[in-house]
Image 1 (cartoon, one colour):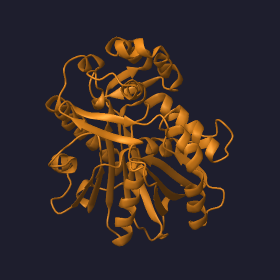
Image 2 (spheres, rainbow, N blue to C red):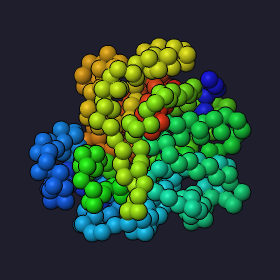
Image 3 (cartoon, helix red, strand yellow):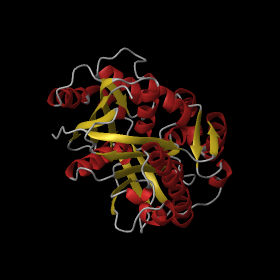
Length: 350
């Protein structure tokens, strides 16, 4: 477990232009999923209990009210993800005071669409990235991608002191909306997921920046592939989301969290968690013996943006910094595998 600090020189987030008010999505879903609601009337409660007021989407809500296949979803992904990649990266680079041409490595995490060439290659020229920059596209991390991806970026920065690493996580979860299916998982995902991106600029500095990345670790539980992920069929990705997830978190999360805190030699660190949903946040607080409501920044991000998968935890970090985050912190996210990703941070006065 490496502990040499890597400075976070810039951290920025971005969302698309279309706003999805939760009340409008609930009305839309009840029409599209009429058969599911007829079988399971209590499903309507998920839109109220999700703890979400609004989300953002690369497409307006009426775009989803048509037959959609891989062609339509992929074009929406290429257009929307490319724009969000560029927007978040530009903001992070400007904050860092670093030109795009000075980026040495680009780490791009995304699991909600397929792009070959990958996103950083598609937008690199317009963004001003130089032709010799190394590209590291990463697929399949899901909701854990914000923490795991930042960890990958930090490891690469640590391996080549002085080199600039640009990390970008961009997810368009709304494109997995499936009006042709009527499963409970589809209804729940329509109440939870939104689109967004986050970027960070990393470099080993002689004088560390006010925010640094320290130790990292992951824990994958065997026999848990069915908890979270994608199924694939001719119409697109289909969400796999087990109803056992909150209970699993309650029972199994504490051990790897405590082990990471001990191994990283942290003392009462601030927790920055991926807000997968209101029930998952409740389960995290129960597992870690926190007072209910402790994860305030997480709930505020969830309320205003929904679950954007990988970038969401970076929205939480950004909010925590605005509120004066100081001292040691642990970022945590859960994703397909089923895997918990952890990252130790240290925030100082800037």
